[in-house]
Length: 79
Image (cartoon, rainbow, N blue to C red):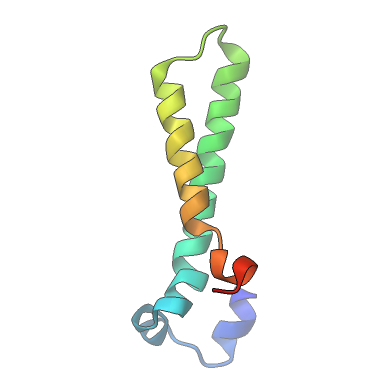
């Protein structure tokens, strides 16, 4: 999806000026990628430790917050 739209003449200057395009092409992919990496780290730590530390809980909250931020709510609820 990203490659096809950028080959149609969409440059990064216009993407960064438009809030909707910036969210779709920059903020959403990178936030989801960071959240997925955090969740993978959390999964590994939870499986290897018997107890859950505060650091693991904080990382989980950050990952859940990134998922909630990057989720396209307007497409789901039509706001």
